[in-house]
Every structure is written in structure tokens, then in C-alpha cells.
Image: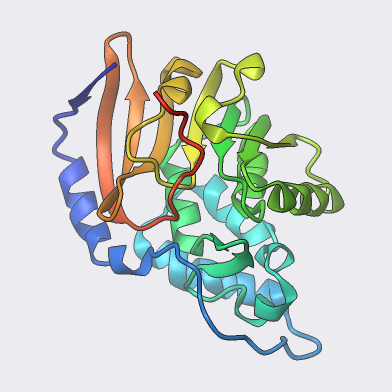
Length: 250
């Protein structure tokens, strides 16, 4: 399907403002160790501060997204060795050379996808399950796929423990999507393929939105709308995500 750029005077100023923080959006494994959080840590206060200083300060304005970011306990999705930094402005390791995304990029992608409570969402790249939980707060139902089976199992357990009955986790290849549950109102991809996977386009409703990082080496987060003629590019943001694996051979 063809991609055509949207001519929109409002997109460029927002992209310019966001470019200043693009260097912070680095989804990569970290080295070393983080101390355990002190006893009696006030996670609610830490989360409130995170939203104020990292999310609101960077032009995220959706009341529903901000409420979800204040509600979902990010520390519950972070391995214990790194939990003290759960509300810092950074991605963190979750094992298997994967990370939990920086809070800001979670909020940015969630706002860009313009979710409402009636939407059914496909997420590719469950990871820790944190983004899926945010999506679960914002939409009717979430179908999330993780190619690394132990991560899928851990995320499923964490989401179930926290009561997210509307989030369904599958261990499988994200390039194939979840065809039996398609079509979806929204698609969110949290790992970077070299091009938009055709199956994900096919499983997105006409009029639906997709947030997806694309590229190898140099990457850009694309916000796309599916139209009758193809994909409409709404805006982009320079990012760095872990590569999307499992691409089927031609």
C-alpha cells in the first residue's frame, strides 16, 4: 500500500518542539545495577512527580492519557534490581536484551493514537506489559503479542495480578498480527521493523491509526492513518527502539 504525506501546518511546530527531547527516547539495554528502593518508598508521589516533570512538561495534554500515567504502577513492571529507578526519565532493562520504554514515549504514543473507550487495540511488542496496561486503561480491549515467550508469560502474570482483564497476551510473531481478532481500531508497535509489516496494515480498520517506529540504525516514529488509498503519514519523531524480530522470509 502507498504512503502519502499529509500536508498539515500544525504538525511541523509540534515535531520541532519534540525534536529537542528525541535524544532521550533511547530504547536500549543498560549495564550495571540499581540499588533497591528504600523501605517505605512513596510510589504514588514518585508517579505524580514523573507525570508532572516528564509528561506534562513536554506537551502531553490528553486528560485520559495523563490519568492513566498517574494510575498505572510502572514499578510493578520493572524487575526488582532496577525498581528504584522505575519513575526516572529513562528506559530500563527487563531481561532478554529488552527494555521497558521511557515514560514519555509511552505517553506520546498513547496520545498520538487518540484512543477512546470503545477501541480494540493491537499492540506488537508486549515487553514488560506496561504499555499494554496503559492501553488497557484507555481502550475497551487490548491484544498484545510478544515474540519472547518468557517475557510474554511474565507480562501476562503481572497484568493479571493488577486486574487487567481486558488485556490479552499472546506469545508469537508480531509480524503476523492477530488475524482472528482483526480488524483493530488502533495498532501500536513498540519495536522497530525496517518497514511497516503488511499484515498490520491489513488488520487495521480504514480510518484507524497506527503508531510505529521504523528503520534500522536511524529510526523515526511514524503516526499513520489507514485510508482507502493507503497510509497517510500524520507526523514523525526521531527515536531509537529495539529491533523488531521475526520478519518472515520472502
